[in-house]
Length: 66
Length: 143
Image (cartoon, each protein chain N blue to C red):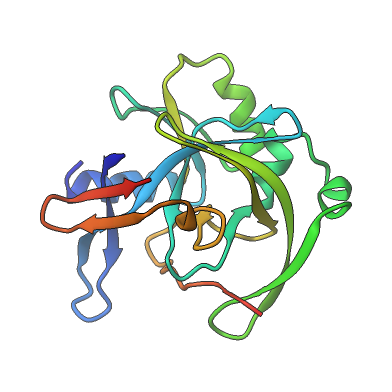
């Protein structure tokens, strides 16, 4: 995926869980609720990855044990 | 195991333009309570002490309810930047990939955790060497 494709992907699926085909990279199913996505994906073909899509304005910060 | 780094877009606060960076992510399957997740993409986070996952992963796939997640767990507090402290509930799980399997590792499930993180204890400490090859855009994990 180039920058423009990644940007479109992030904008479309931000804050959602997506199931992505490992073979084609296509989004097979998506939902805000992971439980609902897990139900949808049961009928999808095998060979997928689940990922949470974060919005563009989120940056990661490390977690520390206190 | 050698895998490609994942391209990610971020908004550069200086230029205001979108830019790409490459992130170390791996897809794993978690087994717990005789149940498994689907293959979930996780970030390898050298700044995270432990493996920290969104609680909804446990609720959606691993047979936990909100009540059972808190019961019989190893409870710890996590703090992040900004001083916010949150409770996380650790359960013994098995981490699978096509290349390796780690039994009896703690995964801490936490509400409002935005993304699954694989941390120093319970994931990275199982490897002899972890390399982020920026030139080839590869992530290399050596057992």
